[in-house]
Amino acid sequence: MTPLQDLRAAVEAASAALRDGEAATAPTVERPRRDGFGDYSTNAAMLLAGSVGAPPREIAERLGTELAQRLGPRLERYEVAGPGFLNLFLADAWHAAALAEVLAAGDAFGAGGAQQPERILVEFVSANPTGPLVAASGRHAAYGDALAAILAFHGHDVQREYYLNDAGAQVRKLGESVQARALGRPVPEGGYEGEYVAELAAEIPDSATADPDRLAQEAVARMLERIRVTLARFGVRHDRVFSEASLYEGEPSAVRRAFAALEASGHTYRSEGALWLRTTTFGDDKDRVLERANGEPTYFASDCAYLLDKQSRGFERQIDVFGADHHGYVARLRGAFQALGGDPGAIEILIMQFVHLINAGDRSAMSKRRGIFTTLDELIDDIGVDATRFFMLQRSHDSTVDLDLALAREQSNENPVYYVQYAHARIHSMLEKAGEERVAAALAAAGAATGDDGLAGSLEPAERALVKKLLAFPDEVAEAAERRAPHRVAVYALELAQDFTAFYRDCRVVGAEPAAVESFRIALSVAAQRTIARALGLLGVRAPDAM
RNA sequence: GCGCCCGUAGCUCAGUGGAUAGAGCGCUCGCCUCCGGAGCGAGAGGUCGCAGGUUCAAAUCCUGCCGGGCGCGCCA
Image (cartoon, rainbow, N blue to C red; front, side):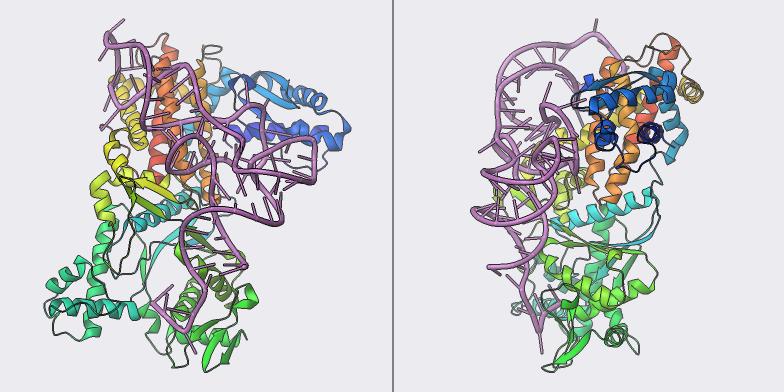
């Protein structure tokens, strides 16, 4: 149990005592906006006003008495404020004990908070292998990877998957485009015009004469390899690349088996020669074709087969990360998932809004087909992996982001990511100065903290603030995981770095007197360093020892 | 027309029921005897798109409207 969970439990117990065990909405225990409002503040009294039948401030007073009994000397004092808040002022001993728990948790601090661990499959990026990854793919990659990392840290069993569209018309167009380039002809109508097409034509020995289908497969394989290299450079690794084409292999193929399952479920029908799935049953605005009148399966057909395959692999939850331009597919996929017997609560389709790269105020329109785009590689060359990831992870996935390249480039040294990394490097340097022995001794002393070690009443505001910021980490991880919001970890990392920097400014660490103070501050610095490293690690951003 | 997302400081964005709404950048003024100045402090800057409603309490929840993005194929 973390120090904060402890505190919450005490507040809830006190609250329950006042209302005679009657059920009620759980009170909040949170850091108030203003320092004068205590270390933590609870709204419990206001929630109790209805059932207890007394003015909130009066209830708060009684609650304070209850709580003081339960917390003993850990609670320095309390105040009733505003409409009925109970503000709690915790003793230095409480802070020291809390730090001890943070350190004792070690690498597991903030981990494993999931109430119900699940096997989760996260599908992300899944960009068509008909061109290089573009900057927008970078946002998908950073988001999906960080989300997977956070979910895993939270206690889930997570698989990362890339769904490869290596079947169908787009792939054929790529093959035709490569061959056209090899023959020095213009690419066909609707083909791909990017420079990489010419590169592929030059790379593939028999590109001028090869059978178009085989050439297409070869081109896709090479594009996938390029994509893999880019992702690896970006720090993103998938556990599996799932081939769409494989869904058409075997007898019967996975697509055929999906059709059979859907037909057996009674949700399909034939009309105008085509096979339809009645997705409107599940809230879609129109039914969808699985197999065209000419016998060709649609793209949606392989989607269904993929959904079925994922179901058969025993995941308790499927999370798909899609681009905003694909949000129109959400309803039909959810419909197909349910038609295949899936629990609608077990599939989540997260929509990533766009990222606009802005050059000197110009929004560059992108078109993979016409070869007009900024690739992820170019973006990384420009502003670096860490800045790219941090920038893209700072914002909520459902908010469009304008990334001003000129600004990011110019100010790369003042980018928030460097600020956080700098704090980490600075702690490393400081601890080196202190020396291994003193650090080890400080950690041992902090672990033995009982609150009666000469620190009482001596903690500086910045030290207390930093302890409380550290304590917030498990909740931030939980929020980030449960709300699929990695950006909360990015925001937290920045705040933690700020609180550390304020502490560093106000409190001499190495050489501080008396020894107990130096010891405490070294231990606090170690906890801050570990937590910064962990937060950055979850985002896929490096935590360097020196810059 | 219908559906999804967004509208918060000059700009880019946090903040999904609590007190006097925040950060970064930009701007103004100050700070390098001292553990890393890639830093620190102070300041200016906001009808939280608009209007109703729910609530002891709304940027946050509900309804309507306005503005922006995206989507609405037997395309992929």
